Image (tube, rainbow, N blue to C red):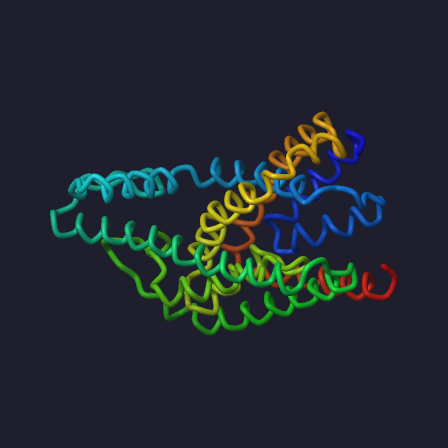
Length: 297
């Protein structure tokens, strides 16, 4: 693989990982068009790891809050009376309110763990039962993703007025419930299939559960962190194959391109989610899916 091809695949990964158009599906189509059939799966996982760094950078404030809450949970420390929100403002709370906020963050951590377990279970089953899928199946997945986005947009618009507000925990910081975590974990598990967008399916699943748009976007990407790390660890056995078939230069160039384009795409997507225009991506996915089914082999 040349450095140019590595950068091209990295940019494609960075854009498609966050925009709800399926990064794995687009990588498979691109590798087919470029005749890069010998690229190991670990190369794709490395690109996912690069975009994961973009997630950590973008959501660093919330991730830090969750890590601190997890640390207090492990050490048994009490909830702090001074709480800093995602907007940077610090509030002084009464002890009862502080306990509620701390409980919310702990529930958020448990929601991430629960969704990850469900995703992992589904991922193991689908990888064993389905195996490698043809490009035509991937293109059919594009169409399925488009239908998910359209359906979730319709449901979200009907439920937009039913969001429960709280003067202790802001709406966009409230943790998903256990059943919402199950649904989102299942949706993310389906998103492991090539052609089905992970971000699109998890955001759609969140919207189906009644979670507001901004919180749906945040949880979708935060819950991707353990999923991507898990996939990276499982594929480490192919590390030698990556260096021999891809090359270190192409790998590093692809990862750098994935990180930079991914951060830009994530920033853009969060704005699109807040504006409620996520279903617009169906205008791209449906034609691409149909053309791929007809012309790709």
